[in-house]
Image 1: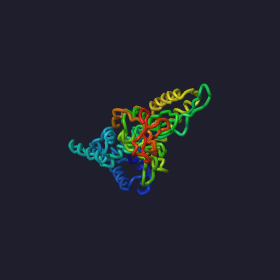
Image 2: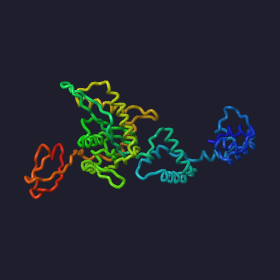
Image 3: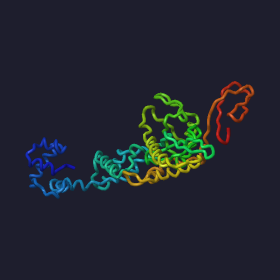
Image 4: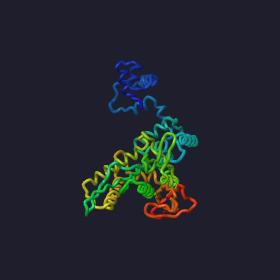
Length: 365
């Protein structure tokens, strides 16, 4: 909005049009038009204190106001919902908006105005900016850097408990689980539980470069842990590890870990636990508090943002959850028996001396 009051005030003080334009951040053409219209309409400084810039605009340029009122206001909620769909962008939506305006015989906003008005609406309403994060697109995962502890009631020995955190960037909906270690089996199991908690699967999975998930990640080559790759294929998702030395790639995952630290570890700092199960239940309880805690800068909470804006865009879960498997290799000895450390399994004798892959799950080997 042009500051008409300030233009008229500065003109009354004898400032040049160039100086007024620099002061109010408007073009000299605008200043010239305003001053010419004010003289034509007999509007001079001082003005009544209650007279607003909007009212001055109506007095000076009634034709412009009438033209503006004929423009069709975009449906911002509709724009916001449609941007969530794959391939939809503001250019496409503006083209459709113009077609609707032409059919109704009203004047559309120009593309730049259309985009500015939508972004202003999204900022004011604190809406999730899907231009950056498509709903149902990505799940970011990480381990928390801080641990909880529980004490054995008989021996008094302290044991660490590790927290796995997953977040959906669009809604910031989080899943946190307590684990007794950070090994591959727990890492995979937590992913399965996270998908079950969210009730769906994202198209992309963004982990950090930890060895339980990523063997190698360079500019030219990415090698995933075989078990991790198998899980991704089962859920039909793509693993895109965060780039080395690019912390912004997983900023929301790290942010969720900080929330988990604040809400869970700090909140439970004065509680004494005497079993892993006690810790697990306490973490699950605090997770629900986190997801239902109201946002500070917009309406709703993580749970409502997820159910209203993201849940419907998640890919459906498979009929049965993935059973985590651990892969290893072994050389077949002369007795053609290989071991998983506890049990021995026979293999065809013609594999003697060869390297074979071993796939182990809790149920089968």
